[in-house]
Every structure is written in structure tokens, then in C-alpha cells.
Image (cartoon, rainbow, N blue to C red):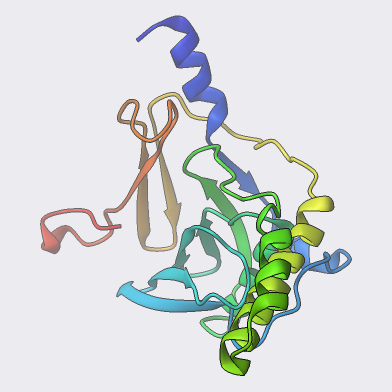
Length: 203
């Protein structure tokens, strides 16, 4: 691996500590939505896959790891609004604080609100009330995302890794590994290696 590639791998992904104070800040624009924004699928004890329901623009998926005293969040979505709502909805799983965020790579995966104009044209042309209502819901979601993106302030991570790191949270052992270029030059893989009886790490 070239020196430049190693440098990219070392700065792209990171662990952001002490994010529990995020929700003490002003609520960002674009958080309005109907129903839950996330569905939490249990993967293993204390490990959940957070998937967007479509009521809020979130774009990607996250992993929520509930430990003895805190929570680790793997990836925090496309906007301040999406992250704010995710932190709020994690409270349905646990009242433990989110203290660590792991970014698996640097892509922010959002559409910059380009779809808003198209949706407005389709709403004007639509004659079926049910279809029009669906489009109006999509427009609200897109407008919320655009409002949230306008407030976005890129925040670099405060810890980087070159090849591996292990986090210990109570009786949970989480291995973070850089295994080489994948989707980006700095992708990380996570493994929960807490239970030696299972014979393999999960996540």
C-alpha cells in the first residue's frame, strides 16, 4: 500500500468520543416526520441494525451496540437531523448514553435536495388523491433533508486508526479492522468478539 493510501486510510475513518452532549444542542432543521424514522432489528444480544422507515431521509443504515454502561453507534447517517432523530429513537432501546460513534467510511450519501423540484411538478400533475398524498409525503421528507443539509457543518473525527483497534465496553470486546480498500479507501469492519463459545466474531 502506498504512503498516500495509508494516509487516507488513517484519516478517513474515526471514532468520535463524547457525543452524548449532542442532544443538548439546538434541534436541527428538518427533523419533522410522521411515525418512527428508524426500525431496530436485533442482530445479537445488545446489537441492533437501525434501518430507515422512509419517514425521514436517512439514506444509510446504522448499527447500535448497547454495552454495560454506554452505547456505540456505527455510522450516523446523512444529516444532523437524521442523527438527532436516531439518538432520540435509540432511547426506545436503552437509556444508556451514546458515547462513541464509529464512522466506517467518509461518504455522506445524500442527494442535496435535487429531487424537490421534480416532486413538486409531479404533485401538480397528479390527479389521483392517494398518489398525490404519497408524493406530498415524499416532498416533505425531501424538504426536511434539504433544510437539514443547509445546516450541516462537517465535523472531522478525533481518533483515527491505521490497521486495527479493540474497544472494551464492560464484558463486550469490539474489534475494529481496516482490511484494505473496499467501497472506499478507508472502510472499517467491526466484529463483536465477546463470546468465545460462538467460535467467531459477529457484526
